[in-house]
Amino acid sequence: MADTDAPGVEEGVPDEFSPATWRGGFGNQVGPIYQRFSEDGTWARGFLVGERHTNGFQNCHGGMLMAFADMAFGSVVTYEKHRFWVTVRLVTDFVSSAALGEFIQGNATITGMDGDFIAVRGHIWTGGNDPKGPDARTLMTGTGLFKMLGERPGESPLLAARD
Image (tube, rainbow, N blue to C red; front, top):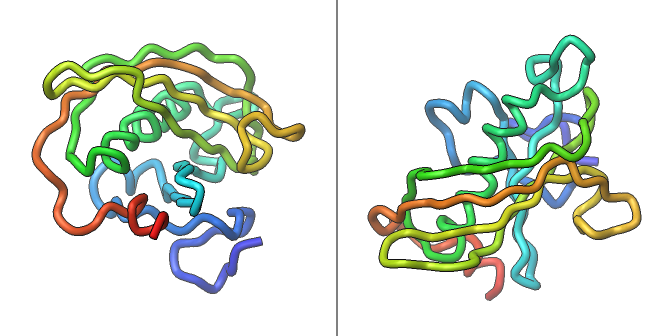
């Protein structure tokens, strides 16, 4: 499990994850949000379902899953195009629920581009880093359309992980 003495890391967060660099605004309200970059080029955003994320059944609230899907699906623009972005459209399907204390992960792949617009397909799951692994359970799938804005400063964390 993660080192709970490290700032911003909650008990129950997998070791491969570190706090995301997003430090302001909405991310602070719903987070902490974590990120993982692997040498094979895969990445994921993640969060640990806390009391503040639950509904009356002690499951992760659908609104939180949708907000997280927006962050996770849009991150492909950050990581692969190294650009800022805004959401144009987000369409999701709920498949399963997540309980209090589960660690949720999400990522996306680019399915098309037209000028500054990027279409993506995303996946939200729990139960290990491999979304198709034997312990994984899909929580949500979806698609999104994001508009790329300006270039991000510094090096892409995904490219740094590949080096």
